[in-house]
Image (cartoon, rainbow, N blue to C red; front, side, top):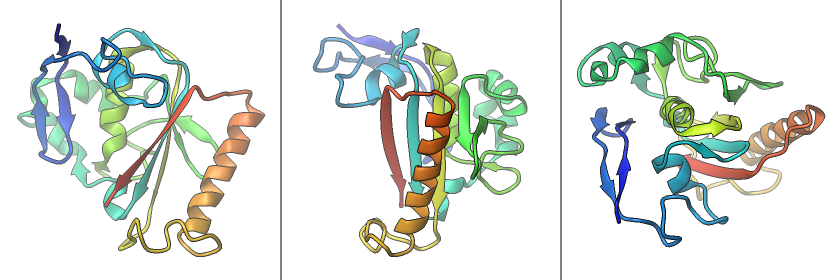
Length: 190
């Protein structure tokens, strides 16, 4: 039996991706098994996932290259709730600011250049629409021209040292605030 999938925004195409039907996953529903984040968060509604952290790393495009003004024009304007999300604060979505996780406010602390947004916006919108409890913690980090197979994971070399420092500081903040994560995911933007 297929399950309905709601509309979402695709940063790649700049279009609203219309919802439709998707066949069940390997567990018989859209909720993924314990080894993955996907399906339940990205396809079912009303889930209680607990706290999840997604690291968004990569080249400078990982920070965001979509213009916030586009939210008010077609085809995105077909979903008026996007403008509401963009103008406000996400109650259960936090972003790493260098010293703390703060509530995501697309207009001020999304980690992108002024007037732009990245994949964090779509993830935050989906989180608010499709989950009932738990917080989403986002960590954005990027370096211009870096490659996933260059020094990204070479201990002691930049950019690995910067990414590791951000992750270590974020872990310490979560621990100091008594926050445990139920799941973590990592997204690379080339």
